[in-house]
Structure formats: C-alpha cells, structure tokens
Amino acid sequence: MKHITLDKILDIDYPIIVAPMFLISNAKMIKAALAQGVTAAFPALNYRTDQQLRATILDIKSATTKPFGVNLIVNKSNPKYKSQLKTLLELKVDYIITSLGNPREVIDSCRPLGIKVFCDVVDLKYAKKVEDLGADAVIAVNSRAGGHAGNIPPKELVTMLAENCTIPVISAGGIATGHDLYEVIDWGAAGASIGTLFIACDEADVSPEYKQAMVDYGEKDIVRTTKLSGSPLTVINTPYVQQLGTKANILEYILNNNKTLKKYAKMLIALRGMKQVEKAAFGATYKTVWCAGPAIEHVTRVQPLGQIIKTLVHEYEQSLVAQ
Image (cartoon, rainbow, N blue to C red; front, side):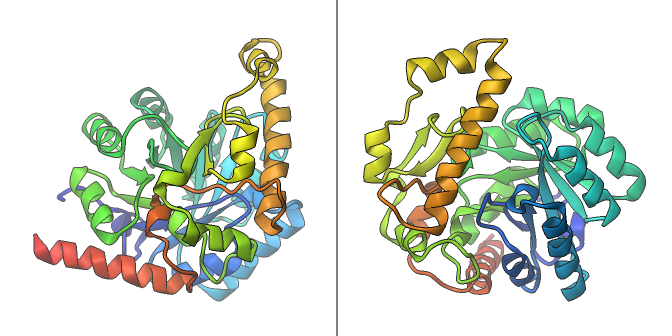
C-alpha cells in the first residue's frame, strides 16, 4: 500500500467515493457522505434543468467545504453536455467523473481551474488514452459493478491498470465490505467508488418498494440486460425483467450494430430504457426495473447513509490493523 490513495488526493479521511447513481444520488446523500469523511458525486443528468443543477451544487457548497464531484456523460447521448460542463466549470466543483465518451474537452477545460477529472474506463486501452489526455485518475469499472458494468473481474482490472498506468486507479464494482475496500487498495487501487450499498439509505428518494427490493433480493438475482440502454446494464431479476428478457431483439440488434443508425439508435434506446427505469425508481408498478449490483447481497436493512459508511470504515480499519 505504498501508492497514493484517494484520501490523500482529495484531502478526505477515507478512500471512498459514494458513487454517482442515476436517479438515486441527491444533495442529502452527498452532504451525509461528506460529513463522514468520504467524498461523493452525483450525475448531472439527475437534474432536468440548469437551474436545478446549479441550485444543488450551491446547496452542497453552502453546507460544507469538503470535496464532492459530478458525473458527466460526454457523448452524443447527452444533449445537455455542453451546458452542464459550462455550469460545472463556472461553479468550480472539486472533480468531474466522465463517462461514455472522449473526455478531452473536459480535461482541457478543467486543468486551468484546478478541477480534477476522473474518467470511467473498462479496459487498459481506454485507460491509456485518457491518461495521455491528462486525466487525474481512472475509475476502473469492473464486471461486478452495478448499472453499466464492464467485462473484466475486479482484481484483474485493478492489477492491470495499476501496473500499466502512471495515474491513480479507483476501483468501481463489487465493494460490499470494508475488507473488500482494503483488498482493492492492496491490489494497487487508490480507493473505491461504491454505489449499490447506498441505494437503500434513508436519504435516497427512491420508492420504499425499491429499497425493500434491495433487502429482499440477493446477488443471485442480479442479471445483465441490453434491452434498456443498448449497453449491458445490471438489474434485479424481477418477474417483469424475466418476462421482458435480457437480450436485445433482432431489430434492436440491427439498430445497435448499423454504423449509420447506431448513434441515433443508442440515443433512442437509452431514452426509452431510462424512462422505464425512472418510473420504477419512484413508484412500484408491474413494469418494475431496478438497477443494482452484486453487492446487494450485503444490504440487509434500510438505514442512514452515515451508518453504512461507519460500518464500512470500521471494517476497513479492522483489516488494516489485522495486517
């Protein structure tokens, strides 16, 4: 553990990011996380208007000076990308997490302002690309991540990136305990981005049914579907998901693989799928699609976000002492 860790990079107490989760992350969760000595981020797309995005950032800044970040989708599926980036630069968030596209403009814009840029990657090829562009760290999205997951197992991905990149590696996916956190840092990670554990927190505004599903279902109930966003998405295998199926049908497959239609198809599929996820998140219906990762196995009750972090930190410190 001689490499630099996230707590040193961001001047926080523990090397944990409460991950930005689509529809789930909110200002209450960010403030609760920062109060426990970790950092947290939320997706810019959780707010429909620039006014709402600005108000959220200013609300958090008025409550604390501790560092937090915003996740920005940087490809054509996000028509608000330019305006969102302008706002994040103007309000000088501490860091931006980029996803699904080329982060060059974000990195070049943030560097003069001292805003750090962490880039989601799923393999070494893309990690080297963003390293060359000047990213401050990579977030290694592995095969055990919730939501949009990668294909490489956690240890293999972290080790590969840590050995071949000169910038810090933050592991994302499968962290369920403090010992898991200790383990990824021992592999060479600077810290971890953790999401699924926090879905069933008191501060989340998702429906009680979604939170209860996090308690009732386990790792064996997590499946991947390409039906919702055109990219592999991990969800709870509810009866509706079973009926819907998890493989793209022939029309969806053609649209996703035709060079001319691909970018437009992905936008349409993502819009349709995310609308479906949004409806399920805030109200239980027969057509229920709930995102989660394998760490769901360790969600045993709905509780305050601060308590979840305290448990993680206690387990992490115990692992440090044991070595």
